[in-house]
Image (tube, rainbow, N blue to C red):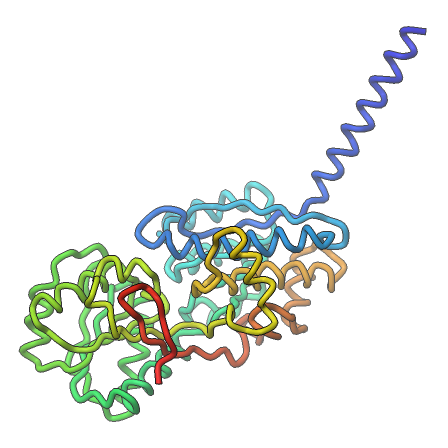
Amino acid sequence: MNKTIRLTTVATIAACSMTAMTAIAEDIKIAIAGPATGDVAQYGDMQFMGAKMAVEQINKAGGVDGKMLKAEVFDDACEPKQANLVANKIVNEGYKYVVGHLCSGATQPASTIYEDEGIVMITPASTSPDISDRGYEMIFRTIGLDSDQGPTAATYIADKVKAKAVAVIHDKQQYGEGIATAVRDSLKEKGIEVVMFEGINKGDKDFSSLISKMQKEKVDFVYYGGYHPELGLLLRQSGEKNFEVQYMGPEGVGNKDISTIAGEASEGLLVTLPPAFDKREENKELVKAFEAKNEDPSGAFVLTSYAAVQVIADAIEGADSTDPSKVAEYIHENSFKTPMGEISFNEKGDIANFKFEVYNWHKDGTKTAAE
């Protein structure tokens, strides 16, 4: 009798273990790849926050066809070499879906690995047109392109600022130089003189010689392509040297830390950013969910990251399959309701008709729509 009880108990435990293993196996794993460390980790925070909230809310609503989403963060530090290592780790650990990467320079090499391995990747932040110009089938993004953002900035500079002598500066990186080039070319098309087009090195601290050169060239407006750490120092040092001109940058500078770095000199900075999706009436309850966690949903990449997760989940459900190739096909052929509104993707995996907007940045780290 005791032997029978023991055998029954073992069988029961085994059955429970198999059930648990089956439940674990049915989880849909999503890798969230972006900078958790490094100079632009603040943008990674936005990405992770938005993606995790989407996972949480989708799971609370019952998951995807009864399966739970399971997300894990992978740190690429916004560096191409690290992104390669991360992408290979994601492949080796069996992930079939990736939200990321964030920086274009990291996304470019990682996306090649995902395409080759049949993994669906949606970047919520990388804006370089080069990423989607390769004709990949598995790669998507929930943000616009520098080929849209550049002309938006140039139009504002030409029509609103009416600058006469513009300096276009960049950080020599894929993202920074790419957007700077788009702005320069668009300005030239509008008849605005670009008197300087120069690169700095990522991590530079002293911009004295650059500022002196801009003063000598009588620059009356500066566009900067890159991220906030270098621009913050450039703004501050320009103020210290009485170089009182207006600056403008892309979404990569729209971070509260730029005000910490530049102080008073950040007041009046112009920034092109995605629309303020957190202000949409239909997102009121979602905004409250973020605020209940003391999280700020207004960051440029928060709701684009949420949307990336939602597109993956809805496509798995719509395709009635977790096969990434079938999910990618479904994404290409359908539209999706997200906190960004209803979105669809073209043959390159880019969002149709994405519009950037121009904002005034303030010294307290807030922003308002530019007139």
